[in-house]
Length: 109
Image (cartoon, rainbow, N blue to C red; front, top):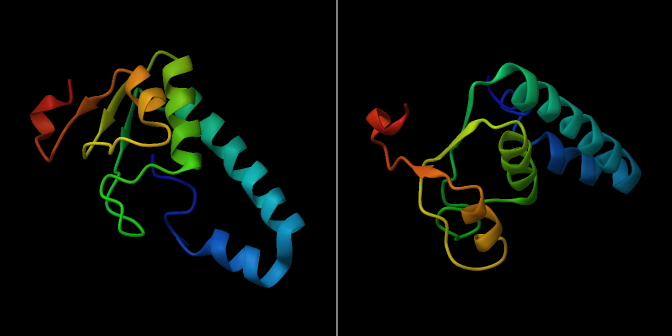
């Protein structure tokens, strides 16, 4: 199952710019509820596609960290496409014991 914003990847930024903080916070709460449903109930595993963003290779943002936690809490296998750079949240991400795929889908078992 794909993230709820895959159809509209600019939804968060547009909501923030056009509707302000309260609307953005409400949207984030809805996205977290969607994550609970998708990851916690419907997925057998979690595969994070962490491509470069804002010049950071292997970027993992706050929302992805929360989804990683949901997957971990629900005993789902966790796969991450690219290495995670050392920095904020590195130890937390590594604590989920992910399998790094690097484009080799045979690692997904």
